[in-house]
Length: 136
Image 1 (cartoon, rainbow, N blue to C red):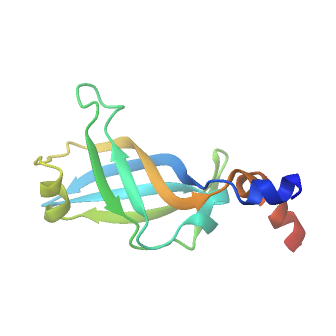
Image 2 (cartoon, one colour):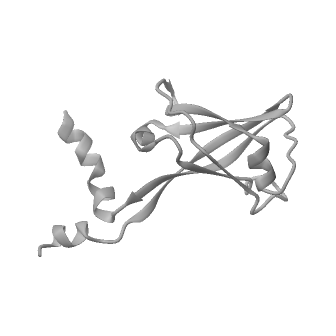
C-alpha cells in the first residue's frame, strides 16, 4: 500500500466552517443572518447544524444556540473585504427554549458561528483546492 492509499484510508474529522452571524430582534422573532465565505459555499447543505456562540459578548461566555441551515444562498455579495453568501435563519421559540434562556436582543449584534459541514479526511482537505483547478 503506497502513501496515498494509506492517507485515503485515514480517520475522518469534522469539517467546521468558522464564520460570523448577525442577530437582530424584529417584533417577537429573532432573525439570524449567517455570512458564508464564497470559497466554502459548495460545502453548505440543508439541515447542517450551526452553532451560534456568544463568546465575543462580555459576560455570556459558553452560551450557545444550535440551529440549522434552512436555505442555501445562490447570490454572492462581493466587496473589497471579499466574496460572501448570506443566508437567513429564524430562531423559533422551540430552539430558544431548548437552550434554556429567554432572549431579548437589543440592536444588531455580531456573533461567532460554526457550520458543521460533515466529515473529511486529511488527504481530502489538502487536495480539495486542486480539484477546482482540474475542472477548468
